Image 1 (cartoon, rainbow over the protein chains, first blue to last red):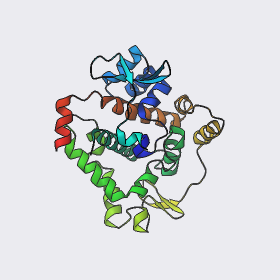
Image 2 (cartoon, chains in turn blue, brown; image 1 turned 90 degrees about the vertical axis):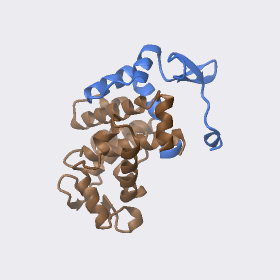
Image 3 (spheres, each protein chain N blue to C red; image 1 turned 135 degrees about the horizontal axis):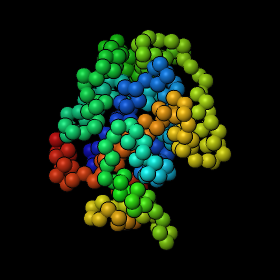
Image 4 (cartoon, chains in turn brown, red; image 1 turned 120 degrees about the vertical axis):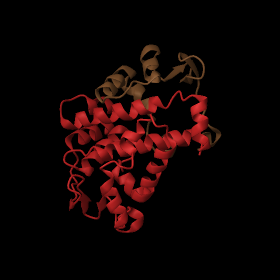
Length: 79
Length: 189
C-alpha cells in the first residue's frame, strides 16, 4: 500500500499503531468477522517488532507467533 | 499482477467502495476525503479525489474485475457488487463523460463544484476542513500520532472513522494467511 497507493503506513503498521485489541473492537462494532491474523496479533504482539536492531515481521507460513526479518521484493527494495 | 499487487488492489478498492457506499454527512465528499486522507496516513486525495485521478470508469472496471475474481464469500462483494444501489450514480457519471481529471470535465469534483452523493446533484465546493481533520493536521505538524484521535470521541466523524478503520484493517488482516490453493486460484484466473 505504501509503494502502490502512496500510503504513509501500511495497514499492518496502522494496526500496530492502534493496537490489535482496539482494531478487533472496531471490526466487531462494524459487524466484521475477526480474522485469525488479528486475533494472533492480539495474543502474541504487534505485526512488526525491532529485535536487536533488525525489523522483524510476524510470519504466518509456519507458526503464527514466529517473527522473521522483513524482506521486501526486489523491485520494492530498489525504490 | 503479483500477489502483493493483487492484495493492494483489493484492499485499495475496498477502501474506496466502502467510503463511496457510506456517504458521510449527507454526502459531503470533501469531508470524507479530509478524514480519509492525511489524518489516516493516506494521500490527501482521499477517496473521491483518487477516483477522479484514476478515472471513474477505470475504477468501475477494477471493481467489476475483482468481483469476478474474488471468491463468493469475500466481504468485498458486500460493497463491490455490480447491483449496489450506489453504482447508479457512477454509471450515470460514466455515461455523461464525467470520468475524472482525464475527461477535462471532472468527476466527483468539477472546478468550484462537487457532487452531493445523496441527491446526485452539484453544489458549491466546501473548502473548510471538518474540525477533526483540522485537529489531526495540527497534531501531524507537531509530529504526533493521529490515528487514536480519529476514533476516540462521540461525534459522527469519530464513528465514521471507527467504522472505516474497523472494516478496512480487518479486511487487510483477512487477506493473510491465504491458503496456497486459494492464492493459486486467484492468480491464474
